[in-house]
Length: 224
Image 1 (cartoon, rainbow, N blue to C red):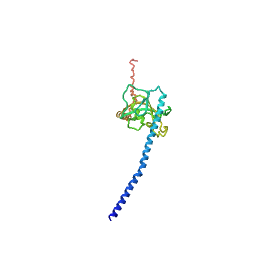
Image 2 (cartoon, one colour):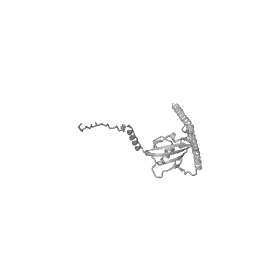
Image 3 (cartoon, rainbow, N blue to C red):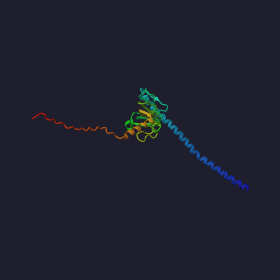
């Protein structure tokens, strides 16, 4: 009896061990494939970034008279209009008012300022191109800056599904018209709303009512 029990237990343990081993072996190819895919993706992105940098550096080399600055986030910029008086720059909690346009690296306009219209942007609180999100925080009021953005901080490998193609580096020209704390901006909006909803006052002066006085009749005092 004990021999039979031992055989049954041994068979059951063998089946469990075999099932576990098969289960583990079945998972290995998935993990391996995932690792290979990630490695290839990283290598592809590195090559793409290097290609974008080469194109941008070639553009800067063609314009030796322009003083370009390298950012810590992997893009370059130059000033068309520089403000050396102010020291403040936009930060989180501010609202920025700016215009911008987008060109390809050949200087061909993709979107003009007229098409893109004036922008009102709450710093770090709204979705916007990564390059603009970072670049605008380097600017001072009334400055106009040309940014050279690699594709990975522009519209990436999707583009915008309209005029901007996949993996396209861009020239982005931004004019920062103003910026102010969000609390101040909200208060101004409320004041404008109150002003617009206020009842209109009649500014037309009504003519004064003229009362005509009766003329005095002169009596003839001469005796006839």
